[in-house]
Length: 181
Image (cartoon, rainbow, N blue to C red; front, side, top):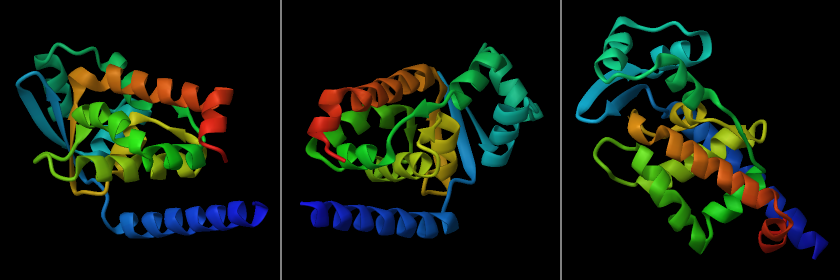
């Protein structure tokens, strides 16, 4: 049993390393930020500067003003961290229940054309949590393995709540038993 656990951990480490190396060449460069019918394409760098430092580009500022969004609330939604065990996260997302968990999240964070949303989101979530056992919506966007990612601003708060609930469930002793480490 101990040998199987070691092999599983080795496999997981190799998998995460492979994903990390392959996704570093392909990561989101543009974010299509959507609020209602309004859409604005901004660079991931501009979104990161806004979220991390409060530096807002003219295009993003106009978009948030037109969509009647509070910039500080948007920043909080993007940067609020969720602490989650990356090994358990990987196991849950790659289990049959993973699709059920990913589908609502992929309504908020997805490819612009709607292809391979589950796989891309699964990869971005696992990569985001792998370094420090924390993830945020911004980190998921940064790790998204396509050049463009659609971020539905109207669903940001719900996406955060779902991620937070998942993290809480995995911290629960039953979650740890069901998805043994």
